[in-house]
Length: 389
Ligand SMILES: *Cc1c(COP(=O)(O)O)cnc(C)c1O
Image 1 (tube, rainbow, N blue to C red):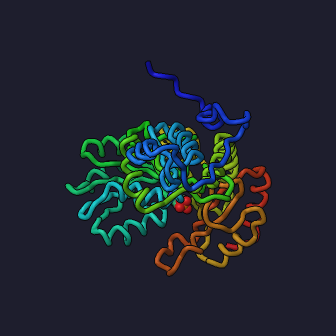
Image 2: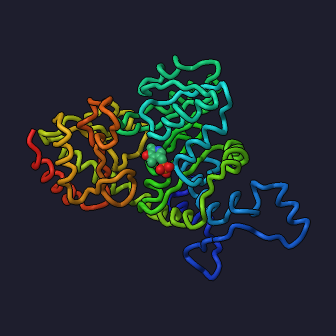
Image 3: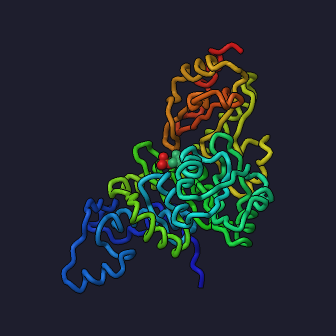
């Protein structure tokens, strides 16, 4: 008999925490590098089955494993591995299934370090790649070669916020025996579960929403038991992208409120977009749940909501105007990353190391935090009023 899917808070607040010592509400941090054995026989048995034993914290640690159990269940996957960062999740999940001569298809506007992995790092090992826009599944199928091993997705994409049709792409990949990996950091398992659509592996920058407080760097990989076991045996143990127990404990604290935080990020963002769309100085808004977005219908079909990260353009060609707007904001911090309780801004222009991307000069990305929406709208209003077009 199939058991009923647990409610989100059953996972976030209860799963794996049934019998804590002293009736403690929160689990202890097992801040230990090693685990000892009573006998020679116990020691030998543990080493025979490293994946399921507590031997050394570069393998398993109870605090880490508790978080993995929750994240696996949240993503509707069989198993999860917590790793030391989002990029460790991305590189580990890809490298574990690639060898020299293989080919990867990836959406073009992926996270910057994912690009570096494809364009520079994997090149050293003779792995080639093709970029696709990702909005048309047929385009992906056309790029499949005999040696294509991975289709890599990020939905929505970094800075441009375009989404991919996960069900159709997973179907194409299965037909050709290709593994699919998706970066699901933006939607989080609260709003999107790619495994339900047939995607093989989900990766997260846990540093973003799952951590949720801008105080931790972490990553996660979720998928079938055999795939996670393979990653554990190969890239995880050998490259050693180990999550430390205290980090795992902070992630656990973040998880407690993930479902509530995501709801507020979503509600706030819709209100702020409602304000921006009527501002004459705003040229373009990139957010899958903006009603005028051509992918709005697909967004509603495959996600239950949107997060607080989106981009827009200001009607100007002047970097000075972008700088003036950015510097005038009082409640948006000027910083990289996103997913915490606080609002942030990063103008694309600060990332330009040359002027090869002129048409993105006026693009800014904001993260809408958990502040009152009126506070943020007033702030954006006054900052926009500082610039003359
Ligand atoms: C930040 C980010 C990452 C990298 O995660 P780290 O935890 O910083 O290593 C990966 N993917 C996306 C979409 C990100 O924004």
